[in-house]
Amino acid sequence: MEQYGKILIIAMPLFLLLIIIEKAYGYFRGNDTAPLMDTVSSLSSGITNATKDVLGISVSILTYEWMVAKVAFFTVENTILTYIIAFFVIDFYGYWTHRWSHQINIFWNKHAIHHSSEEFNLACALRQSISSFVNLFTFLLLPAAFLGVPPKVIAIVLPLHLFLQFWYHTKHIGKMGFLENIIVTPSHHRVHHAINKEYLDKNHGQIFIFWDKWFGTFQEELKEVPPVFGITRPAQTWNPIKINFQHLWLLIQDAWRTENWKDKFRIWFMPTGWRPEGFEEKYPVHKIDNVYNFEKYNPKHSSFLTYYSITQLFMTLGFVSLLFANVGTIGLPSIFVYGLFILITIYSQTELMDTNTNAYFFELYRMLLGFGILFIYGDWFGLNTTLDFTNYAIGFYFLISFVFAYYFSIREFSGYKNSAKPVNS
Image 1 (tube, rainbow, N blue to C red):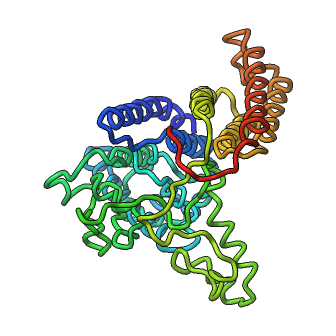
Image 2 (image 1 turned 90 degrees about the horizontal axis):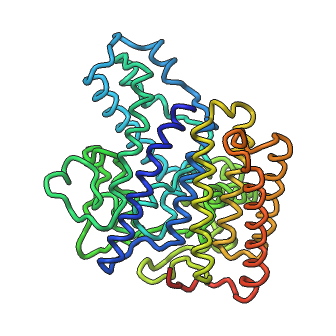
Image 3 (image 1 turned 180 degrees about the vertical axis):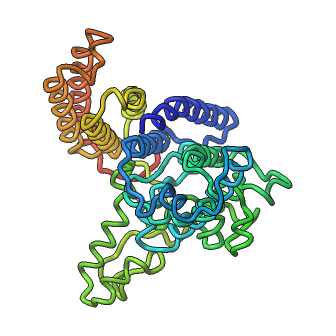
């Protein structure tokens, strides 16, 4: 946990810088692909996922360390070849877990968040799951275990492999010549994120595209079919915590409603989107029928709310950075208290972005939790030992945030009907 937190301290500013560069490039070229609210939502999702990973809130049914101990035919050193083998095996593992996430109802829940943006930009790469608490697919790393690739090598290559999937989430890079035959490019991944019928469930590769060509899931980006992005049952919220569990909640409801016991069981393992017979009419869910004619989610809001949301995002990044840099020092169980604070923060701020008239209640909960931490711990997880005025500054910040949330909820949001008409942002 501590090592990964320190890696993220380095990675987060680099990702943020690239996102800002993409935004500026698109703006000055007259092709801005990163609306501000969508970008803030994506970054908020990235914060929740990174916090979950740093806290280690997941379990592997079968651990790689156990597999190496039981099935390794060889003992190998940490050579360049070992890292190359690990990289290819992890990419094979990534292809199949990614593909199954698209094809099996229950596994789609952990992946829908990544596709939930109706834009395609670098920020949406950070929309990652917090809803997967159990890893069932470690067995796909068996080829590396047979060859005796040390667990330490896998632990190093896994985050590197993940970070290398960031760059191709962009509309500003066209086709890349001969590289299109080897690696996943922005063109390939635009196809993957598209909801056009020609593109659905294609190009599951993460670094290498040849897996898709070998296993029959490859689709080239077509000039005559511009990709349209999002999910066919649109999320219709900026709140990443809600998005993480929307599909699961629908499965639970459908499993409860159906009287057919066979359907109660098989709904979880049927192809993604399957529902019991007649449920589309009896319990309709909003679905995009014409991908070329629908309104993207963007509730009416003021420019003030946009810039307030950006400011709060940077404040949250400060809180998160403090956690990641001091995981070992803060220790158990305090890191989970801190993690809870981060999740409530994201929930509260994105409810404001959704122009929810009850959003100030969530900000009230956050303020009370923050004051409770200051009171019980005596300071903000040791920060007061470095800067002796931080208790007052953080307390004042919580109070001001609540005042603004109350203003938006009671004064601004009550003036609209929560429509989905686009605004300039």
